[in-house]
Image 1 (cartoon, rainbow, N blue to C red):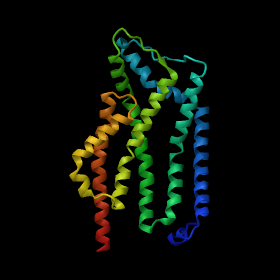
Image 2 (tube, rainbow, N blue to C red):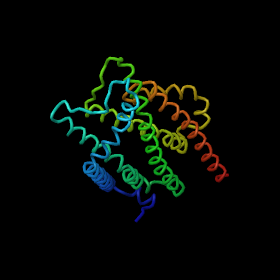
Image 3 (cartoon, helix red, strand yellow):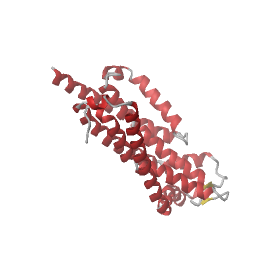
Image 4 (cartoon, rainbow, N blue to C red):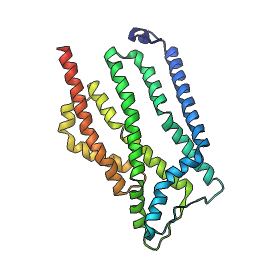
Length: 255
């Protein structure tokens, strides 16, 4: 049963910790279920991740690659499978994790703030998925750039664990990066920053966006940098607009 703000404030430290433990256990169980599902479906998931590399090699014979991955040690294949299962489990369980975060903080929110929480959870899931898919869609272009710079006489033989690590980190970095508009809207609603400040400082914001994009993308190539930096710039402006609209409606209602 949902608790009121007053009931939440009356909870003891131990009750808050017990509530936090419950939410953590539920989130970890969801991640474990997602990881087990990916362990079972490992082969099709691996084929999905390797597909951009194979398609690139098939279409560009000059790149000296055949789309194969190699295990250079006894645990390479095992570590790749575990990495896909672990990170994939987090992605699959993301709606459950966000829902538990919301359930933990919702007793301390007002009725209006609870209505915004639904927007935050839903938009976070959608934006993370869009970011991860964008990383996957641009993967072949990034690989083509990286392979091209390695030299015409260099044969491409990729270690499975390193390739999986690159793809997974790229999809995660794009997904996390695409969550920034949700954070910006939240900061505007709690009046930590104002839309006017964000608009007047847009030049600095763009520089910071591209610096962060360069840091969090594992490949470091300009194609990936632009593929992440440009959408984040657009989303920055959209987030400022949404925040300004919500604040305008709040002030209008208060008036």
